[in-house]
Length: 142
Image 1 (cartoon, rainbow, N blue to C red):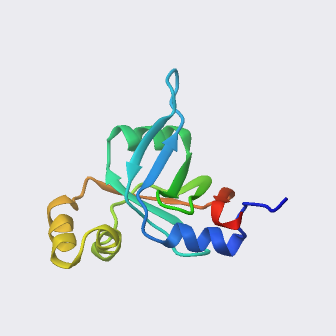
Image 2: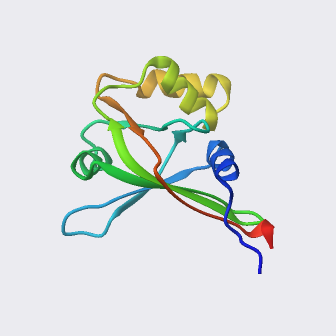
């Protein structure tokens, strides 16, 4: 029987592709928070997520100190990667360059720039996560 598990190189390459991520973080007395997010990742690096400081996501992440993020393909062959790890930093806004890099993954050219111009503020937070544990599945390996 063949394994559907991706190699380290395959899962990091997949996570670096453009996918809407689903962030999951524990919450006291409630089900885990699971919400879609835009993110950035380069193989071997940190997972970067830009959000508003003081948001439900931000508060839960600060309390938990760790999170999971899943990225998936919704077309055949189905694939997913989950990266879990500790938060390395979440106490400062992204630089304009970091915000543009994230936005331009999801919005083309001027549209991404306009998004950053309207959304980046002193209240923004760049969450940096060091992936330590991984889950993956590639149905194309069947």
